[in-house]
Structure formats: C-alpha cells, structure tokens
Length: 154
Image (cartoon, rainbow, N blue to C red; front, side, top):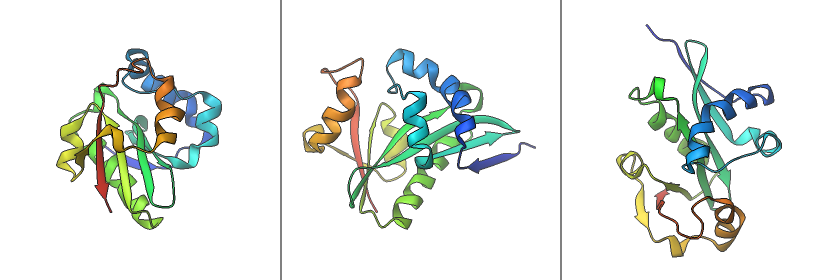
C-alpha cells in the first residue's frame, strides 16, 4: 500500500522540486522558476510525496484580493494516474476559499483535468494585463500562446 502525504514544502525541497519539473520546463510546458523565485514564494506551494518521494506539486499565486492562479502543476510520470494532480488542484481551491478569494485561474495544456474539476474556459484576452507581462513574456512560446485559459468561481 502506497503512503501518500500532501504537505507544504520547505526551502530545502526546492532542488528536488526543480529536478521534478525540469523536463516540463525544458519543453516549455511549465515556466522556469529560479531557486530564488521559488524560495520567495515557497508558501504558495503544496507538494505530495508517495512513499517518501516527492511526486508532484502546485502553487497558488495570488494576483489580487479576488483572483489567484494555479501555477507549476506537475506530477512525476512515475506517479500519474493516481489522482495526485486533481488532488493538488483541489487543495489549491480549498486554500483559495480559506483566503477569501473569488476566482482561481489556470493557463494550461491540461484542459480536461481542469474542466473535470469545474473550471470553465475563458478568453485569454480577459486575463489581467499584469499576468500577461509578468509571466508570459518569459515563456518559450511567447507571443504565440497555445495554452488554454480556464477559470473557477469559488
């Protein structure tokens, strides 16, 4: 029986987290977050271990008093198909509710995963400008964005 543990990572977990997400960063599926950037935002992350090994993580980044974004959602290929990604998203949504947010955004290639959890597709043009310029300009695919924007109303 597998032991699954969801937890708030420590700064000492950052290197393992970066190793886990490296392939997705290299392909441009997930934006690179430097060690310093991850350290300054470590409180936004939730991670999951399976049998003591970090199997995935996500982050809830707050844009405004009403809006947050799920970022950097990744599950190791070795642990996919176990609902870990869905549970990480659900935990982000629960955290958003606890913080009193109204909406949670996702820019993703995993449309079905988010739709299955109640997210609705929205136009990328409706995204806040600071979101576009703060993150998207760093993307390998910029300015040709093929991610799907989805929104969840809390």
